[in-house]
Length: 123
Image 1 (cartoon, rainbow, N blue to C red):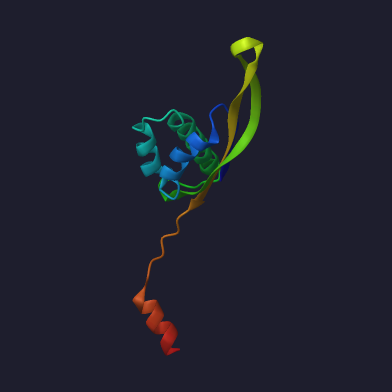
Image 2 (image 1 turned 120 degrees about the vertical axis):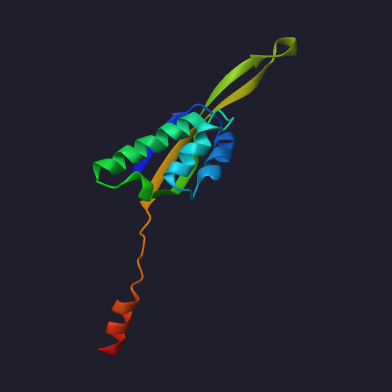
């Protein structure tokens, strides 16, 4: 299950701090952490995560079985702006954007049945 967020108006360096915090965690645990996080990127990442969960529900997968397999933050477009400076000159200001790619995977719970193993070994 995938979800994308393109041209999010925050620098990738700042968004990667939040992305590395929730990468590899289960979906309910990641949502709980993003709710109380004091970073601006927390809300858009939470909305992206809920969008991916909604995509998974369309395929019939429960939220409790999902975990964040990959959360990649790539560089988006950079808007170039000018700031007036001394003696009629100007300095360039880079307004950076981010592309976020979220991939959820399902955790498979394996049940070990010792009787089935013994039967398989005996035959």
